[in-house]
Image 1 (cartoon, rainbow, N blue to C red):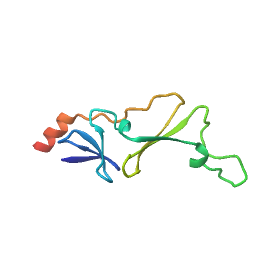
Image 2 (image 1 turned 120 degrees about the vertical axis):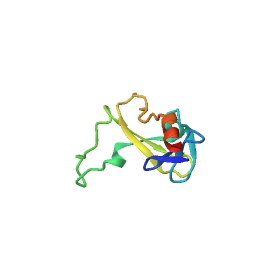
Image 3 (image 1 turned 45 degrees about the horizontal axis):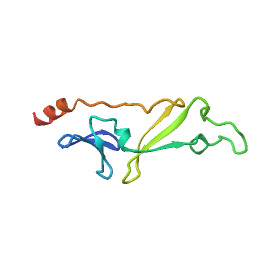
Length: 109
């Protein structure tokens, strides 16, 4: 039994695994941070936040000395599952922790 958690992320309650909702690829054990099962890319802000007016340096881009953009992709189909802005050197966040036992009991009952 799979339960959708985010737009592109599901959890398989039977196998207790994180699953890409788009292609069905099993990422990692559901007790782990799903991001560890993803491909990770750090994007330069110039690609994501181009200048507002051509020829001008002004944009809504954060200062790269204080912030970085990290993206997480399914290793099979390449869909972006998540992204986050983090200070340089900050570890990847663990943003979702499921109570698998409670979810399984809820599905049974």
